[in-house]
Image (cartoon, rainbow, N blue to C red; front, side):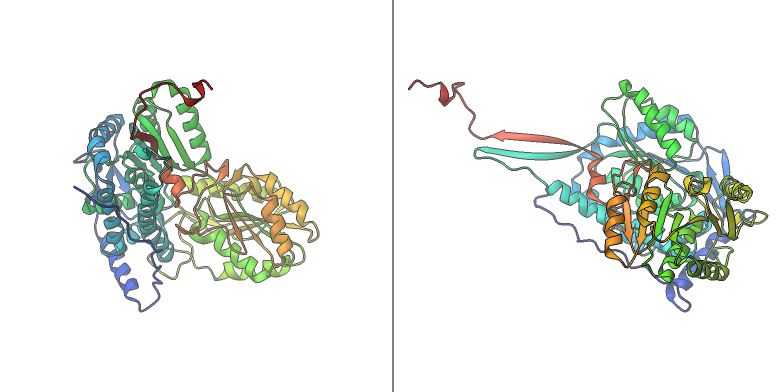
Length: 543
């Protein structure tokens, strides 16, 4: 039996390895990539204590080399969703009753496993399965996931330590109960860290989870489950299934024990989920927690006082790292007329230097987009932009899917601040720039605020602090993460809690205590030491 108030290790952000030529990590990752390409995996679903193989095998291909076979995963159906829910509910009592420090130790061990023996395996899985280059994979699948696990454990301990005041003769206590039922984690393709965080953050707080990743992220999700199993996660706490969205939704959103959803994905899907939950609200034991981070149309606005080279670098990195497949990617930019020529020159030079190709070649800055559906959507936007006489494509605009789903980094300059590619999320390597008169900064801020229904990330670049303050105030509701003199991407766990408002989500800030609080239901306990025995209050006494 535990007897003590325990303090978990104070977390520090996991150092990002460089993978520069001659480093040991570069050699280790190259070997992990070669080993993964040489094998074919058979990926089961993880339901309770079982590795479930449905026999309905779906191939896994690298997006940058879609003729190469990495292996197969076993796709499930509604029966597997029901099985996963039953496994989650069966595991609930024992898991919720486990002392918090023992729950914590599992996730701390998982973090150390990722930092050590699994680092190159999960990076290689992310590089091959999601076409991320070595550095992007290191930041995401290793460092950010490690940080999520360690910081969330620390935040959990702070939450449990947050207790109410007590008046004389009374002891007030706060319990942070897991939700009544199971949590559904629905995760995207683009970040292995998000795929790992959404189910583990809920599980950490004593919940049991049904987890459905995107089919295009299954390869790395399989590694995450291997890590959690080795770390000692009990059977049934997190149940991993590969099913269609409609099949999952039909079963989960009609189940009386559905307690909440932790979601990252498109705005349209999230809004449909919210509608479905609302229509079914009478079916549930309690009001489900609906937590989601969705799309973005993230902006960069430069002031006339900004450094043109800093602006162009923020755009090159912010728009084109991971082929723009980040919900935070810079997708629209507002550049003042006084510096446009220099910014343009720098941008074109940057794009000319980009190398594009497979992730296994560490010289490639640009890799493939995730799949054919994404390829067709992105190139569709490029072609529509090409047909608009108000637009000029000044870089890129070409694409090819014969070997992999490659889209050139593309820059569109528009004279129409409300054009299609200035307003709609593209989720690919496409940046649209609007050049405004350098003296119309305040009016342009109003344009930035009103153009998009999203409010995920955005940035201001300026040397003039009055301009910085004005932008910060005017754009107060335009972004959940607002950056000053930086690109609008690259939030770090524990430093820039991540989330968006408006059409971009519920802004529950992954990487902060507020997110974990969504996965508990508080219960106040008041204990009175000397219980009254007379109903009469002193005011009732006669003078």
